[in-house]
Image: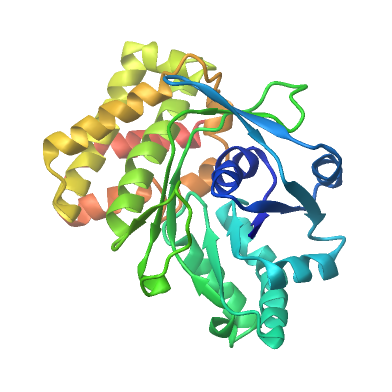
Length: 328
């Protein structure tokens, strides 16, 4: 089995790639960074270091790289012959890779290779739908060659120490939830995936708890002159502000999806514990980057604040976090 993954960065290698490797797939990473592609084509293995509770090292083998900009013919052939296509490139980049995916799927349909699963593993709600729309604009008959499925992904992958090569350090926790409906009862065999009937509660809870809380910690921590995420949550003032933000998103999630309040509170506390993992040297600069995107209409602050305000609830903590983002 072969998996083509767009984005050979730390998340691609340390999250999606390692789970596909453990599921038995040979990996082809598509990227535009030629030095990274060269490393993928010369190294025989890399190691994913999971740190925290039940830490372990995972040796990944059976991979290669293709430069998606410099070698479009090879990329098309990989899409034509892949058993699964995934991405971890950032939501704004999906529209840029859509034409290349469209060409590969067009070749796939022409060769009679059958449909391939396409899943965008991004920090955005329904990112795969957006990718599908962009592909369909180039290749309207795309449904002849692809099954598009939305996903919710969650794993903290901090900036890496220099000199690690292809190795990646990540937290032990991960979640990869995928909607099963597009597959009609026959889902790919990927043990690391949780297949769900309704993805909305999972992806919204993740975005409005994990991503909201992580970014809020970064912005409030930056305002307090703190550089590390774990240190920021040790500051009582920062922690109180983050907890107030997550109390507001908790109210929305409980009302919208019917989560029991104590269940959502346990989820919040588990998330905050993950942020304080001393083995992850995560920084407020990394977590808080791209603040304008993170305060856009459908994102982790304005999204829940707008819904709460429409339902008549106060949103002072979320508005304060937005102000902190603008000040970064």
